[in-house]
Picture 1 (spheres, rainbow, N blue to C red):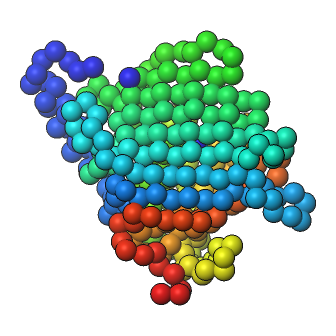
Picture 2: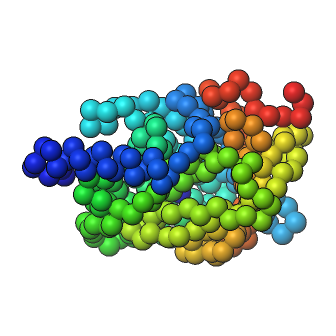
Length: 274
């Protein structure tokens, strides 16, 4: 769930080349979200044949200034309820600053507790020098500073979610793979999203939504098994709101279901009730 060169002309050329490179190689069809958007989810854990309401998650988008430029601040928070922490404790906070035009990340922070595993990550994306300045601290170990090559279209976890929402799935056939390049734990991963077509799904209050269905390849680790362990349904409209997310984890399976959506770029989501 962290310099610019001293020669101003060199810096300008690097910035120009970097911006053009991002626009040409990492195109977005349209930004499906805007500042002011807030999404809330209930999280469920599968216990045998029973789905337990075990936690909740919130996502928000706000305008912000970062290093003298206007950015979008993406923020997410997820938690299990204390009464279910004995099954698997989750406390997660993710934040990113992104370029509003390219959706490329500029700054990222992750602070998580998943069971007995804890981690804190901070990345600063240095496009002129094509590197990421990283700080990672895990469990009770000392934090480590490092650098990572900033390759084209490299996204952090938060940016990947919102970038995914801006994909034009009308250009793809069922079964097609959409590559995504993501950094996690100071490692770059070449993953993919598989387009599975369109379905109508219902939330817990029986509201039906016409959706795009995709399988997402996850990174194997403390919580996930890896491979295509997650399936997500996003609204088949300009908002591309994730409505239902299901994932296999090492101790069962989890599901997140949309409960509230505010400040959408378009006035309403694409529901069969409309």
